[in-house]
Image (cartoon, rainbow over all chains, first blue to last red; front, side, top):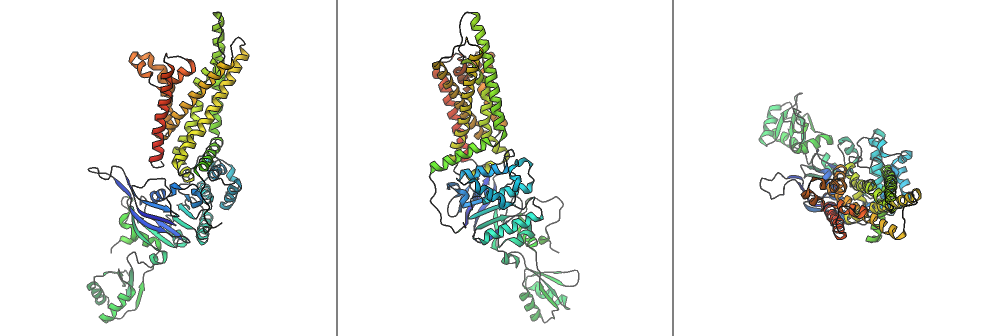
Length: 321
Length: 260
């Protein structure tokens, strides 16, 4: 279990300084990551995901607030690898040391036997490459090495920052199964990824942040029903103008679709059906729009994207016809 | 074992520190750079030290006197110390360059423990190797030039001086490494403070020479080759003072700043 309480990280000038140019990378973040589930950690670049994970692991000092791993600040633990294992940056390894020696150093800090090192090397499929120096590793091999390090202490909590980067399809499927299996064993798993389709398949729960603030903290099923983003309903009726007028009077946004249907924003199928009944128009088709996680994510985070390609179109969720 | 397994009691700080120190030792010996640095230290200390001692022996003979064989280890350490200090420096700074400090602090998140292990182990290794190399240089010089005097009393004092210079230089180096987090910047600073400025400043007039007498390298040179005309107390103050100041500043950076 990870508990994040009012976590805040400010960079740059002191918060009270005049004309402060301080940047709030993480802004009063509060959420729990529960055991037995895969919790997806989503947000645009610069949203504060990595900074949050670094503060959970005691690498960066919060400006205020705190994070607890298994009920304790990570930086006070004598055997931290038994409490939490993490892969933050697969490149952060001494290039001149072999993968196996890298893990032996970690094992030595916890009094773990060399046998445990060989176990995790087998578990991640690094095999004979473990005896070669890390400078010759591909990104995918480095990810596997990092995951091996995270698993070394058989921890109750796991944090993975973009573990699928650089992995081929086999590797991605392997990480998915691994993460699933770890959660099914009752462990707490926090997983950040930019691969929305991957997240959709893997995560049970989502924590979404933007510009350092919490946007959503909800079960995947709830997010996928669109309860946190704008719901959209498509309705087909022969009396387009009458129904559109009635919906507009209810304060709903209505857009004609190209093929003569109406797209109603912020409404459920029930609402639109009731309005049609009251107005006395026939309904030939009524459907809540199914969204991919990607569309919902873009809708939720559209306002908080900090870095966007100049001239790039607005994210799909933000387009107002 | 699963996440549901009951927690066993945590080991005490002494155990955690011993494990961290063991990990530092594994870190040192599992990168080739360490061995290249030690090889360079061996060549510099034994080679240059022995040549200098042979020269001393010849000059002493010319005036009908004798010289001590221990000048070999002392002159050799003047040069060879930089390869040894590089071992200490890389133990600290290489992880800031690669980002490997992040996993290190995930394994040893109590930063005071990491500071103690990372200062103690590389400096102990560098000092032990340095003293051994000085001894080899002294003995080799005596074998090549039997006129050189090698008494056990003088040898003990000389090797003690070598150890003191390496410990003080090592703590200075580690402290600057933690403070600057950059191999190049810290290496340049150590080189200037420990060798270049103390040797050069006297050539730039009296004021510059006075400044030079405040630098740690002046103390090191006095201990090793009794040059630069300062007192023993002055030299000790320089070595201890600079090391302590660097350790406090570097320790503050490790304990208080973000991981890096």
